[in-house]
Amino acid sequence: MNALDTVIQIWWFVIGAVVGSFLNVVIHRLPRGESLVWPGSHCPHCGHPIRWFDNLPVLSWLILRGRCRDCGAPISVRYPLVEAISSVIVGSTAQVVSTGHWGQWLGGIAVMDHAATAVLLQVLSLAAFLLTVFVVAAISWDGQPVPLVVWTPCIGITVLANGLMSLWPVERHVPILSDSPLGPAFWADLIVGIALGWAADIVSHRALKRLNRAGRPDVHSWDWTFATGMAALVWPAPVGIILGVVALVLQGWASSRKFRGSRKRAFSEVEQARRLRGGVLALWGLANWGLLFLV
Image (cartoon, rainbow, N blue to C red):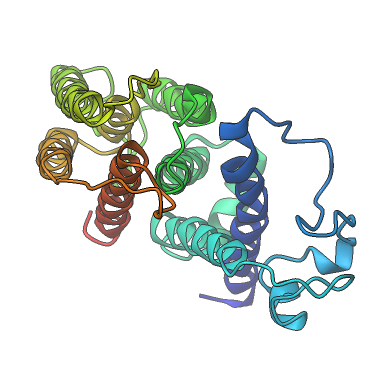
């Protein structure tokens, strides 16, 4: 890597951290039906708006030693952790897909060269997928139901990328997006992957129904269906099927766990089940991230 490649690669890590800052807002507000835009970032204890120089991803938390500048209340370590994880996801994806030669691809992207643009599409689609799984896992970990709208950006970017790649007969330098878009292997991988994710969701729904003795309405989520479907679109066949099997096995194990609700506990049985589901989703997402270094 030359100096230009290094600078652009660092830029991807910074972009990832900035995206992570927004994901903190999504994870906290979206399940509660709050606006993602208004009000702006503020201290949850004193309500004071956070200054722009106190809102720098990771750095501001370290400089302020994890406390609000105005009231001195502690700021959860979760915020910089989400930003750091997002930075690693985006930065590592860009590094692996481009093989570190961003100077080579930059000119091609500027003139919409097919091969260069395909590299950018691969980065965007895979990063969007991994970040979405991460957000879904974090919301579930909080014991909250996950709104389906979380998957919208990921679906849009991935479908667009696959559509364009199917029209561009270019050599793939990293076989992340399906190596045979819209071919028989592509459809088999997609259909079976979605079916396995759907089965994992059904297992989860039945477990939650058994735990929900109080009869409270439970919002059915289809996160596994979307997750395995997106995995089938992102990864070449038959990786999507393999990941779907892993999802079904993991969710089956999680759904077989026994819970003991108590008023003294912060989470009810249903919320504990969702939290375990979030942990399983996080492990599954980690496995997807690890595939970056194997393909």
